[in-house]
Length: 105
Image 1 (cartoon, one colour):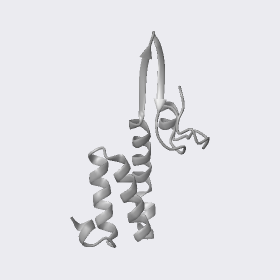
Image 2 (tube, one colour):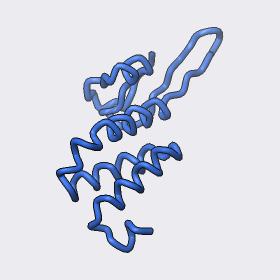
Image 3 (cartoon, one colour):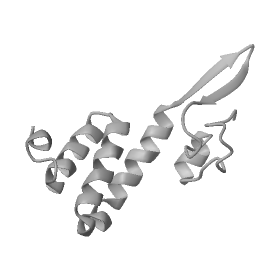
Image 4 (spheres, one colour):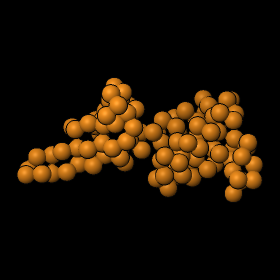
């Protein structure tokens, strides 16, 4: 697409990011939003909310809740900067950067 033909065109990256977000490809959306902002710093304030949504949705998608012997166990996979619980993700929090990449809730 346009990103391959004109990789320096920020608007193409922005369109790609929004399409990825719509298709629940949150990692790709986040990377494309970041690329668009780097290519055109004037776009950064306009896409900040979209970028935050992609990060929040990615964190929520990485969580799994299991019921084992009647007890709930929440596992959050991923990087250390990702929220460790759904409550923290919904609140926009983070796990404190402990390097563990998540936690048990």
